[in-house]
Image (cartoon, rainbow, N blue to C red; front, side, top):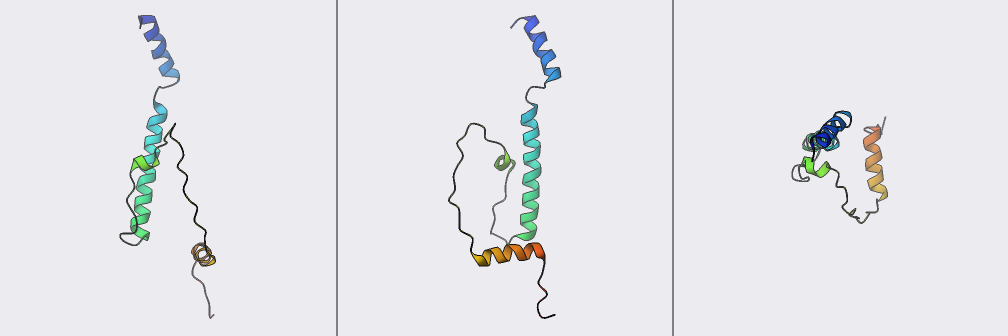
Length: 93
């Protein structure tokens, strides 16, 4: 690489920082991992979850997407989820 090429790359790096996206992805992955672990430790039953790491939230460019088998949700499961959004029921009043 010549000195001129190096100067051009340095100028380009000032306009469009090289590698900045990776740092932003890592920062967001750390935050998401922290939030998930905080909420799971407060709300989930002990032993029912595995603590996440920032690597769980990092984008994996170029890797094939893993397809998971979708589970059918029962009417009772739907009722539980909706009651969580609506708050405790006030039956009998």
